[in-house]
Image 1 (cartoon, protein in one colour):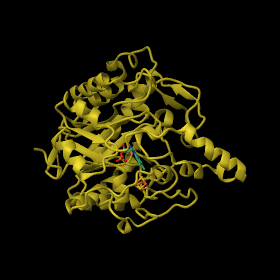
Image 2 (cartoon, helix red, strand yellow):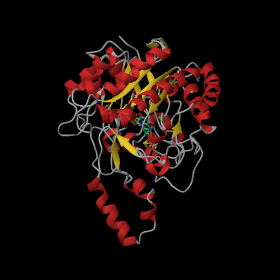
Image 3 (tube, helix red, strand yellow):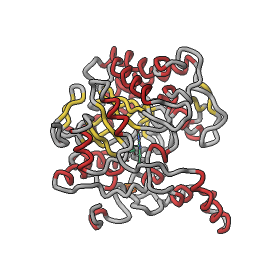
Length: 416
Ligand SMILES: Cc1cc2nc3c(=O)[nH]c(=O)nc-3n(C[C@H](O)[C@H](O)[C@H](O)COP(=O)(O)O)c2cc1C
Ligand code: SF4
């Protein structure tokens, strides 16, 4: 029977246990995309805290794929030395570091990139009011090239592997989606065509970095679109990824609606509104109106916990490569069931590592559950501040605070 705390492999990498830190945007980039010093400190805490592997927050492979001013960039070789130094310092902790590489697609912000927003298919506006253009053939090939260059760069910088972010409504997932991709050329239509951008990255990258450098994929396995992904297509996608030489698949969900991708017990109205300067300057009665309307504009999704496990289990039945389940996994007993009864190889956690970077050590010492209350305020806060836990209190968009500092010290809380 599989054990959560036993070593397990992804490609040629051996992880000391089956609990991975899922990619989590750290908000620790300077305006030029270079990492702040805090990033090393953040990874070090996770590594010392027992994580089997660390998947970094997403970094953009191209300037026009940047989503936030505090998003890390990785679009040229000037980033290699700083990451090389970070990775060298982390080697001693025996926690592989996997760089998550992404292109924001329609979720990029023209205001910060100074360039057109592109996606698989055009549409009138994205969430920031920017027009979204359909990527031309030349742009698609240049994006494939940018991902391949980033993989080569990641290897040179001493990362232990990369993960392609093909989930959550960013560019690669927009191509994969049967709803968001409306193309009629070789990049749209059949599942194989919609995945061509991803399989193209694999075939070119393998020529550069060989078969032994781990390349993982995070995919959305279900969505809420009427003609969206079916379970059968999610399995098909996983099988195509395996054939393309993918080393492991992380199973997530959703295309852009953060309440779907990251389940929360209630709509974080105050947190979202607190970040809107327009809202802060409104007279009281308008504020009240806004607050009353907000829950109708965003919907809470259930269940709160283990919500991608059924699809991950289904996918695992059809592939031989490791499968990682992510999404609301909080409890040690659930993790044991996921790996031993459901056959899933790894679990990955995001929010639990924010509130308790040493959560894996804590589990090993007998703590049964994460202390995260799933409020999701960390996600709202990180759009402007460095990553931290707010423990249900509204992030202050005007103050940038220190890494790892929480509103309520987790150690003072009772375990759930
Ligand atoms: C603050 C925050 C930042 C995130 N950044 C990323 C990211 O950079 N890349 C990614 O694939 N997912 C990102 N996610 C999603 C998580 O990796 C994960 O899929 C999701 O939060 C569900 O896992 P959890 O319930 O353990 O938090 C982020 C989530 C949070 C809360
Ligand atoms: S702010 Fe803290 S308690 Fe709330 S979801 Fe994030 S990590 Fe969990």
